[in-house]
Image (cartoon, rainbow, N blue to C red; front, side, top):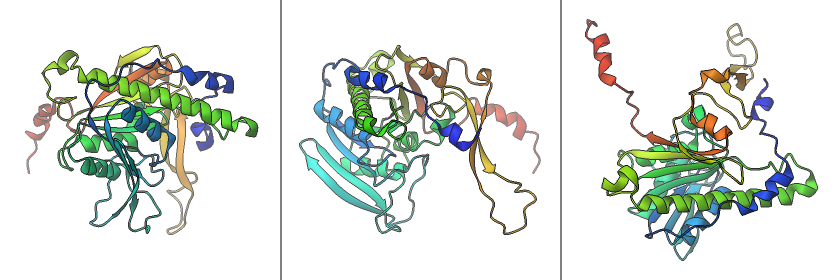
Length: 336
């Protein structure tokens, strides 16, 4: 499979895309106004984050939006770590909202900062936010894509206590319902409108879900914050006007690229790197290899997303493996 074939999006008809307008029925606003930091990796003016901003402000929340100047996808939890690395520009303000773009000083303010840095800027300007929301991302972050996602990476850094202050965090992503670059010229406006309607539906779902969290459902009844310390959520909304439901699930092991079947991502050479002369540049990059469906996690996020479910994967900033003390049996026999 070529890189182009791997990155091809799932075919979608324009008629089905336009039918997305209804989305989910609008539900009640939040039970309490929250102070929310909002960021992403697609850029501060991306349609997903702007739709999320509109829904949160409409629900009565105070929103501080700070996001990269331009798209910085695939950055995971990378940050701009040197002093004076960032140039922050105030873009807009109004009732319940302030917006900022975050760029790098080294670029003279022409290139966006890392998504995680931008999320931390949002937290800092917001002061003491009740929640960090990253997204709505253009493209689902399911399976192993969650590991390299700047949307998820921003949420992970927000959860960690080493940067700024730890904040409950939710990453939200979706596939667009059509690709403006793949439709006829006369259909581009309709495609963009369909995507805008879909983002609005996803944003309203998130506003409703945050309101639900405020009611302290389930085990959250004993928590003082929206979520337990160090625990976040990676939510993915399918590109459909009628999701089958919401499923709490686990992260899958394969990537999907929106094509509907599992792919193992390969980074490497497009030629013989091992036997190349020293100093010779060789083309390389990303490619994909089809995976057996059975290699993925059963009932994982990728499988359920493909079936049309909204998936919720609880995530943590702590990288510690399960049952870490079992490794003592390895170390005990090591002489040094």
